[in-house]
Length: 136
Image 1 (tube, rainbow, N blue to C red):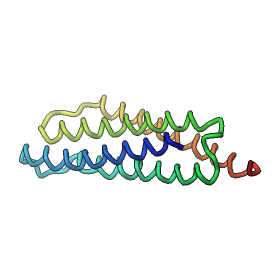
Image 2 (image 1 turned 180 degrees about the horizontal axis):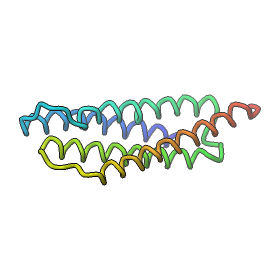
Image 3 (image 1 turned 135 degrees about the vertical axis):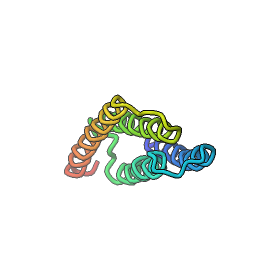
C-alpha cells in the first residue's frame, strides 16, 4: 500500500516541478511555439499521481498487492512512465532550443509506451483476479 502512496507522491512532485520547468525554460529561451514540455505536467499528474491514487483506493478495497502480478505491474508501469516522460522532457527541451530531436527519441518513447501498455495489462489481469476471489 505504501508503494502506491509513495509513487503518487513522487509523481505529484515531478508533475508540479515539470509545470514550473516548462514555464521557466520557455520564458528564458523566449519560446512561444508548441513543445512536448507543455504536456509533460498533465501526463505526470494524470498517469502518475491520479492513477496511483486510484490504485491506492483499489488496494484498500481488493488488496491488489496480494496478487502475484502486482509487483510486475508496479515496476513495469513505473519504468514505462519514467521512460516516456523522460523522452518528452528531452524532446521538449531540444525543441525549445531549436535542436534536432532525431528518430532515436521516438523509438525510446515507443518502448516507454509499450512498457506502460504491458503494465496496464498486468494491472487489469491482477485486478480481475482479485475481484473474483472471495474476501479473506
